[in-house]
Length: 456
Image (cartoon, rainbow, N blue to C red; front, side, top):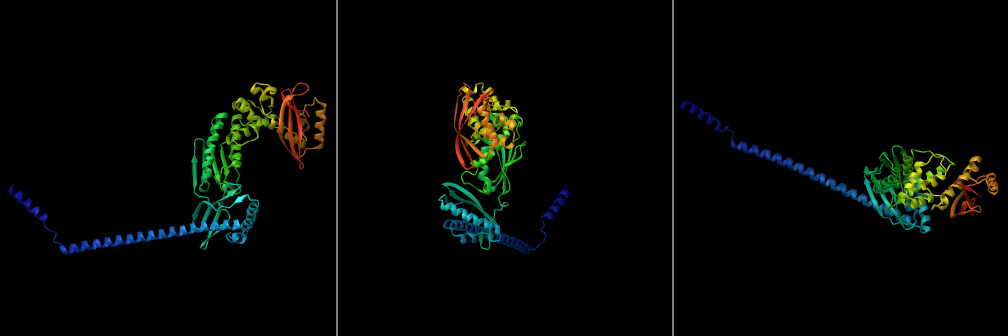
């Protein structure tokens, strides 16, 4: 037992024994390591400070160029305001002769607007973006007391900026807005427009499908494109893929980039697609009244969406007085060759006592008559007339033999009454615009076998 304890004590003493290194040498080595770490830290700190100074300088230069951009825009607007063509052209990029010519024409356009008192050049910059050598600015101008905006593009030239032709590659990062009924893809310059468009499309599809029961339609996919040659149109109508031309390519309302004209285009395309879904892509053919009924329903649905007057008086009166469901029923029952008598069946009421506004139907019939005359389709044309009346037939052939003229018809007054024979008759006062003249005419239509026939 004592021998085992002795060996243990010996080993313990060996473990506790010092390694024999000089303590001063250890302190020197430790000091060297600390100095090295301090130098590394100082170097990293210097690098960080240098990077921060560089970034600060870059930001400072960027702010200077952003301020210079704003000064350039204001100088350009000032030149337009005072009519200084030379100063205006000095800001334009001289590398592109066609651009300079376009800007000369634009300068004259502004001069004409100023002389008419129709424009106020505010110089307000609604948004500005600088990306290295490129920049764009959204500039406001008031036309007829309404705010409009134009997107101007610039290139850095030396220490300043020059106005250039639109740079469609510099339209901003791609983004997407998804709502319940639609997906809208857009680039940064179109953000305000995309927001308004997305809200409108979601609302329109919801209300349209409440009326027409759309069924299993694909989700609407919309791409806003910045391309001067592009058009607002379906790229795949069946799959509901729509392309819309950016309004900032031209001039647009600053507060409402999704303005009335563009709303009319988009709402008409969407209304037509919903009507096609409801009718199974029914193809109607003139001279059958089904062609008018379908087109009038599309115009009315567009009006429901936008609250802009589409001129669809017959469908509007049908919806207002008998319910929008009657339009859905009318479309569902319509065939390619349906006549206007189908409408009487839908409302289950004779035309003579129905509360309907026939103005756009009369205008369509008069335009159709001229179209059939131009095409030489005598048999189809003659079916538009009440040929039981000799006077109507003779007057009709006088028109046919005289040939069709380019005329625009607008019904300014309409009366439903009874003709001398006691049958229902429409008496329309029509304003005819053609051959440089505007005249008012009285046009009569008799109800013959539940179909309106021209009687004058």
